[in-house]
Image 1 (cartoon, one colour):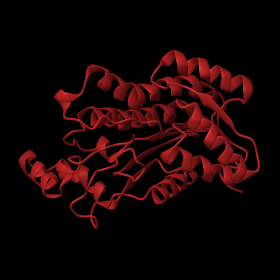
Image 2: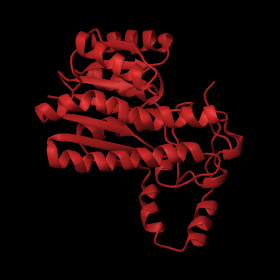
Image 3: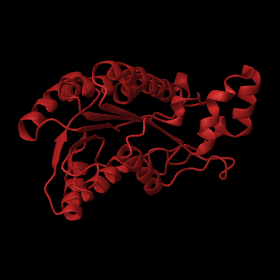
Image 4: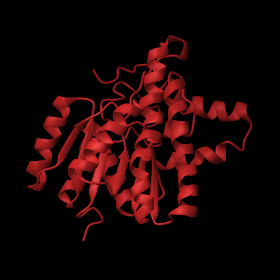
Amino acid sequence: MSYFAGKHILITGAGSGLGRRMALSMAREGGTIICWDISAVALEKVLAELKLASGREHHGFICDVSSSEAVYRTAEQVKDRVGDPDILINNAGVVSGKHFLNCSDLEIERTMGVNTLSLFWTSKAFLPAMIARNAGHVVTVASAAGLVGVAKLADYCASKFAAVGFDESLRAELRQIAPAVRTTVICPYYITTGMFAGVKTRFPWLLPILNETYAAGRMVQAIRDRRPRLIMPPLVFAIPLLRLIPVALFDWIANFLGVNVSMEDFKGRN
């Protein structure tokens, strides 16, 4: 029997991209999906797709995850209508894609709110029930940009560095108080979801821009296997080791690989 069968799985940002693909995959394996998204249109569409794919009804809630009030209010609606989730997948994300000084205060606040603060709000809402029953799974979709700084991604990298740190600290705390509650952090390179439309890579055989279907499948497998961490592609694993070398050499390698020009033609999702 699948790890997802019979479980309530809450996915933020489920209306499109990776969230949508993970939702469809887990629904086919018997999970009941609780979709959160800020777009009513996207929610309506994905719920129809989920019903067609699984033959069952699923649940959708409009929520701005950057707002603690909205998250706590929507969480109560979920508990009343569906019950406590068994798996929480913090997937919602945004990107500005500008040089730091060209990012407005509002854009920076939005990036930190959606990519970082939302992790705190959703976890505060749903972790207590997981801890009480010593069962559950919290998934943080971070990024390779949570492991290395990139030009034109200062706000995004800061938000994802924080996400990686959040998962690591949460894992340590849960090991002490509820060891059967698992966490998974996911750190992929750029993915063809549309969110990073226009990005480029200098060496596709070393740092490929990941296919959305492939990436979502790897993520679902990592969650199914309860892996604590998924990093892709393999070259990203070298980042911690590269931090042992002098900073000037570290920066030279990043520039040689094209990391800091990868955002030059960024367009993003319309």
